[in-house]
Amino acid sequence: MRSIHSLAKQLQKDFPQFQFDQSETFAWSPSTATIHWQSNEADSAAFLLHEVSHALLEHAEYRRDIELIKHERDAWSYAINQLASRYNTVITDELVQSTLDTYRDWLHSRSTCPHCETTGLQIKKHLYQCLACSQEWKVNEARLCALRRYPIKKIHR
Image (cartoon, rainbow, N blue to C red; front, side, top):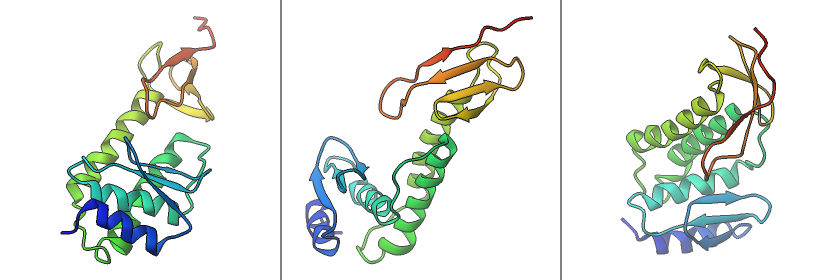
């Protein structure tokens, strides 16, 4: 299996429309067309192909949190089906599911009512409402930082 550095060089040649930046984290930045990658992760090659997939699939903004999970699932699927064999990289289902689980957990935490702990529905970007008690709450971006939920509508019983 090739090194992550040689894979990144090959990807830069194959996809010159994107910048490749060795970084502290893996990320796709659509505003700068930059794929950020790191070399100290056990599955760096798989994660790098995943980020390239986001770029090739033109993933940018999402309006609903569930759309982010769809983007993640689609990027993994593209990496497995279109890129992995081309770049001699093994992407295990265990890795994919483990990574997707972090997003599922993130979504569950965001959608849990801070008042009664019931699952709510997203009604706008960063805004949820509880199905059980009608509490509304705002959430922060929280993909790379601690989740915060801020109740915005007082419950009257």
